[in-house]
Image (tube, rainbow, N blue to C red; front, top):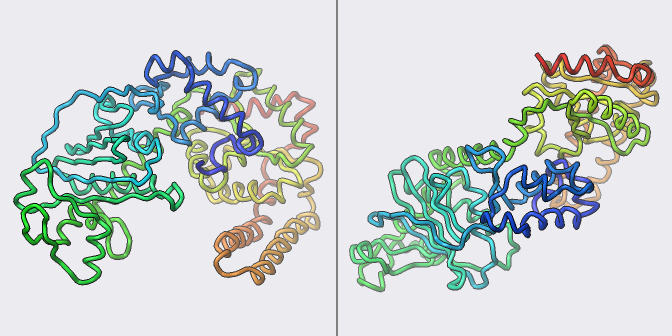
Amino acid sequence: MGNQDDSTLKHYVILKPEWGTTAVYKVLDNDNVKKKLGCFTKDDLKDIWKNGEYADMRDELLQLMMRFKLCYEIPGLPGTYIAPQLLSIEKADYTWDDTNNLTLRYTYTFMPKGIVTRFIVETHPWIEQQKLVWKSGVVLNKDKTRAEVIEHYNQREIKVRVTGNRKKELMAVVTHELDKIHNSYDKRLQYQTLVPCNCDTCKNTQTPHVYSLDALYKRLNAGRYQIECENSYQMVNVLRLIDDVKSLSVGTDGQLNPQVAQLQSELEQEREESLTHGLKYSNQKEVFISYTWRDEQSKPLVAKIEQAFQAKDIKIIRDINAIGYKERFKEFMQRLSRGTCVILVISDQYLKSENCMYELVEIAKDKEFYKRIFPIILADANIFKAIERIKYVKYWEEQIKELDKAIKEVSADNLQGIREDIDQYREIRNTIAKLIDLLRDMNTQTEDIHSESEFERLVNAIADRLNE
């Protein structure tokens, strides 16, 4: 169900999956949301999740729903969301020019529910006027090209047709998105991709003969470049049949063709922007606290810091290493570049945590971000004496040694992740001395100084930075 590392919900998702599930069902089962055919706003969520256990986590729960493709934000209507499984079952009303269409059908031996609702979430930035969408279908409109994707659940099939000037590219993006959804099911998902015949007879009929894409590829690989149409008995070019729906999009090297890749990346970018939009444009200034939750000493301190900032109406987002590491780092850095600040609570455990250190190493690559970092050094993080600093370098050297040893005992197939870890540990090992030096030289303060002044200096320094 998506990447467990996603979103600030990391601990909750793992520790209490039913907590998240119950919260989500509260939305999908809500009479109001059902009445509005899956449409809801942040105000609705305030009402639905008003209980204590959800109230403090509303943003994170919404992130969870969006990450797991259960809803999307309507482009152009900030704070308004659609849960596509509650959309109207009535097909939207529109006209369609069916001359010169590219068409494709997927037929399933056993058809799982919800392929099209997931497809709707993935492609929602391109829904025509944000109106042509219903529970089992959608019309996309991009660069004067339209794609219609409709699920016929009782017939166990999905039909795709595309019209307009960038037919092949848009068809390639549609099939790419559907293939991704198909691949997310286990290998038992059996389906056929059916390509319509393009001979003169079939071109002008609504019921062309269809070929299985697999069978066409099989012919191609056997060096047979022609196939007979069952309607007209004309010989048809196999390459052209495939090219209409597939080969244009993927080169022999398995890479997407440049025009398709460009269209695909536009969709991915718009989707990502839509996903982070709620966070991006929130007018609340954000302050992150990065600390390691493995460290008992940091927790009470973080709670105190939170209170001090709440009093000043500044929102604190706890625990950047829970935002999920690596995949989400890019998004975190973008939020950081938009004027957020990070308080680092540096403890002995922090300097030994790969998540925390990964983030510190990445932040250190961009000198600009130093202006936004506010470290607090806990007593057990001995970074003020050279001999103590060497201990941390040695710690990471030991980690590398242990992994090196493990590598020798593991088969090559399982090495991928371990190699990445080793590279990362080496990077931490090579930069930790420099990082600690920087932390030491910055205007850092110890925990006692802060607590005595109710964190006044910290709050004021951050408030100044946020207002720049």
